[in-house]
Structure formats: C-alpha cells, structure tokens
Image (cartoon, rainbow, N blue to C red; front, side, top):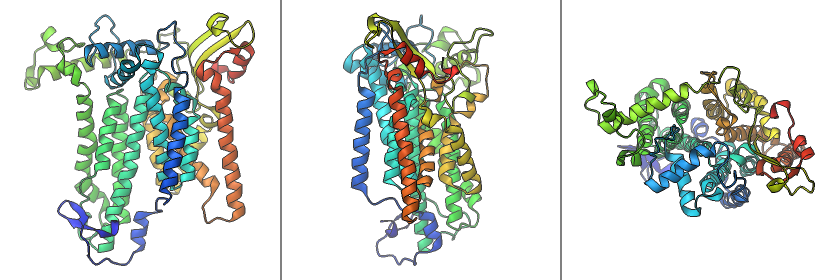
Length: 524
C-alpha cells in the first residue's frame, strides 16, 4: 500500500500507476525492520494473555473492605464517584473539602458503581478494566518496539506479574487510569512515528523528498491527534498528566527531526519548525487542553457543583478578563484553590505519614504502602492457626523493580552512544512520571504516584531481554542460550509474583509468613 502513495494537496495520498524509483538505502533506513507478519498468532497471544490478566485482576475483587466501606485512599474517591452517579456527573459536597482532582477517573469509577452498586466490586470494577487494558496495550506496544511477537508476549507476562499494577487495578483510586491513558498515548506516538516514516519513504522513492530544503508536508496525522486526546484524558484524571503532554510533545518533534534527517532533507531542524511544530502544538497541546476542559462538562452544566459560581459568590471583579465567561473564570479560581491545597500539602516536621516516600525511592520500590491490615482471629482467620494476618501492600515485584536502575542506566547508554530510539522513547515516558516530583521535595508523596512508571519499566526490561535473546540470524547456540536466559528470568518474575500473591490480595497467612514477606527494613 505504501508504494502507491504520492503527493496530494494534503501531503501524501494514493496515485496508482505512478513510476517508482528503485528502493534506496535511505528508504530502507526510514522504514526500518518491518513488523512481524504473524498477525493471527499475535492476535491470539494478545487475547489469551489479556484474558488471563483480566481474570487475575478481577478475581475476588470485592475484598478487602473496611467493614463494607472503602480502604485507604479509596475513602476519598469512592464516595465522590457515588455522589457523581447520583448528581449526574459532578460533586457538590462542600463539607467534604477534598475535591482536589479533575473528575474523569471518578466518573469512570461511577460506571462500576452504577453496574454493581456501592460495594467493593462496584467501586473497583473500572480500575480492574483499566488494568486489564494496560496488559493489552503493553503487549502490542512491546511488539511494535521490538518487532517480535515473542517479546510482546513476554512483556504481557511481566506486566501481569507486576505487583504495583496488580494492586492498583484492584483499588478505587485514580492512578491506574492515568497509567492507562499515558501508555495508550505512547502507543499512538509510536504508530505516528511509523506512519511518518512510511510517508517520507514514499517521497524518497518518488524523488521529491528534498525538493524543498524543509522537506515535504506530511498531511494530517491521526495517530498524533489520538495521542493529544489521550494525554488530555490523563490530565483529566490528575494534573500530573501535564508532564506527559510536554514530554510526548517534545518526543514527537524529536521523532520528526530524525525522520527528516533519514529522508535526506537538507534542513531537517528548520523543516520541523516550519512544517511540524505548529501542527504538533495543535494536535497535542491545544487538543489536550480542550479534552481536559471537556471533562468538566457536568460541572459546567450544573448549578450546585463545588465552586461552580465561585466568582459570583466571592464578587470577584472580572477586570481585563471580562470577556471570559463566568463559568470558566470560576473553574480557573477553583483550579488555583486546589493548586494551593497541593502546594501546602507538605510533610509535617517531625510527624511524617507512616508510609510516605520520596521519589528517589520509587524506581526500586524501597518504600511500599500498606493499604489494609488485619490480624488475629475473626475475618483474618483462615491460615490454620489462631493468629492470622490479612494485608494488602502496594509493592513492586522485586525481580523487576530492583533492576530499574541498571535498566535505566543501560537505556541511557544505548540512547546516547548507540542512538537507540526505542530506549530513548521509553525513558521519556518513564522520566516524565518521575523527575517532576523532585521539584518540591517538601510535599507529601507516596509510592502509588509511581504507578504510571510500571509499564515503562516493563517495556525497558523487554528491550533488554530482546538483546539477551539475540537476533533471528544469530547462531543456534547463541540464540538457544539467550532464550534460556530469557525463560529463566521470566520464570523468576512469575515465581516472585506468586510469592507476593497473599499480600497483594489480602489472603489469610500466618504471622511468620507475613514477616517473611517483608524483605527489607523499609518495607515494615
């Protein structure tokens, strides 16, 4: 299909019968290694692993609860979602004073509560579906990054066995949703990169890639548009989605520069500034803002939502912003009030939260979080002894998370000294979720903020495993040794996940077993 594309007023398009130039090295560089042709097998692998992961996420979803009520930070968001369900999509409980995040994730949780009611299954169902979709996306993204269905399958197994994604998929909290939308946006950017290179390969083949020193126009890019929508949805879950708006916008432009260089464009940087910058600002920047604002649709349509008429109640003068509708000015004022709340949410001197952590501990998961704990008899019973423990602890599977620093270091080396764009792209997604938290270290922070990092860690590990596995044209002994190493490591991750299973799901275990689960002093 690509060979039939040519110039059109909108960029490139079909023109059957046009004479094509012979394939060139430049064209081959643009196209790179083709995607695997085993589409049916890849589909079966994706469906089977996603189904397995969905079962793992959904089993016994309603447990644990706090005597029928939410546990840990579910206590903030679950009742807000329930109120949204009763109100028609917005919150208006002024006495609660903790409506400090955009509405989208709570609206999604309300869908589960609408289906199953106000119970553990109801307020966790949407999170479990989001966690299951992350498995599907990781498989497909890893396959596209590595051009290997086998490595895509391995990535799927790893993401199923990650403790952070598993438990966050089983909690009525916000972070699994931002992880889903960020990962989906990343997948769109990868597809956009391939599409841009396919279009430029056509221009190279037909001999008009360098007719302008800035290179050709590339037409409308739906995948880039999709990425803009998705990072807008991420921001509509939590404001930290804005970090990925900026990071993915820059990544998209970097992809464009590299593509124009590979196509032999005389002035690729200026070409990106002239041809791609404005569309990228619109397709990722403006679109994400519009999507974010649209997530407040119920708030705008209401009369009693929290701070809906803030500027009127406070009698604030419009001044130079009189042209801005009152509802939008109220939302801006509401936003600044919430921002002030977050900025003042600092760690009290001498009295930190018992499970607080700082971002330098997140890559290796050195300070997990205890969500639920019950010991003794009663509901904790079932371990075969008089003293039992039921607990759920947010902990990253050590067989993966304890390798984070080596993987990040290797990825940086490959990015800088081997120009491996795959590692560079994964690092952008990872660091966009980590580095901004170093700006204000006095703020209260918790390990669950690292939830969006988990899928990018899995992708980085998959790239490393791909190098261990070797290339298809490598010798039998090299390939066999690599396959053995990859299989042993994958088995280790699965075994590690099985070991952690009781404290990820609240199973009844003995006190000795509970103590054996706490591998590090910082886990206690």
